[in-house]
Image (cartoon, rainbow, N blue to C red; front, side, top):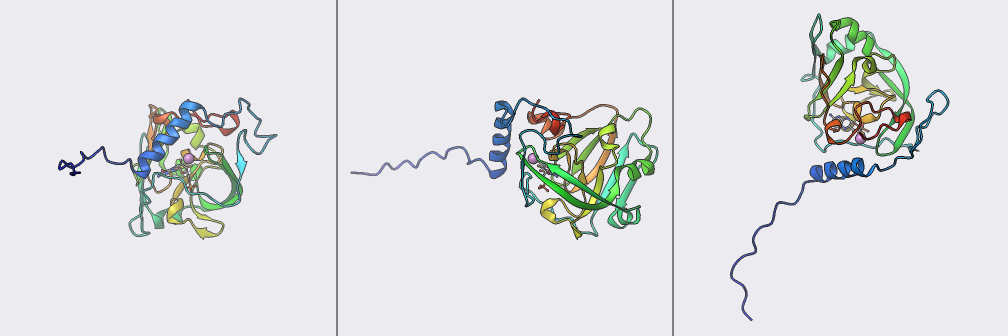
Length: 227
Ligand SMILES: Nc1nc2c(c(=O)[nH]1)N[C@H]1C(S)=C(S)[C@@H](COP(=O)(O)O)O[C@H]1N2
Ligand SMILES: [Mo]
């Protein structure tokens, strides 16, 4: 027997972990995974339909976990605002701080109760930059290229924060430290980790998962997982 002298043609490169994760989550959206077909009243039911409680805090992202040092951290708030600002970490810490307790709900099914946060309320940020009358949306941009979109009234809520501490400790790099956004009454993909910019706009602009089959509004009690 002789060996075939022609080397095997190289196939397409194997999909990366990131591509696999994106494909899997797009498949879930197409299949309507986890949908129970029910809704619940958040005043009456703490655990949204189809969710399961966990004790630990899972890590979910696209696999790039940028290291943002305290010295390098900058957050731009700009677009349709009267007073755009670029905040350093010291600037963020010099704004009024608040403690908050809230639950988290991830579209991959886990929910985690009673997280203790410390940070700056979205309302403090709104008072600082003063959105113009035609501002309707806030686009969140992150250091890993991730984006997500909120309506201004979803951002303008008492439990929405720029957070830098969880359970009394600085938020770890894997969970989006030094500073991430927290929007606890929406699925957690709306809470950008490693936030870099909050852009106020007149037009809506679907973010990374919203463009890939995930719901624009993302209310867990209405099972707005996909759409
Ligand atoms: N910058 C950035 N923020 C992100 C993501 C991401 O990939 N990049 N993933 C989102 C998704 S899909 C989820 S479920 C939560 C997970 O946050 P955690 O890893 O702290 O649990 O972060 C959200 N924010
Ligand atoms: Mo997610």
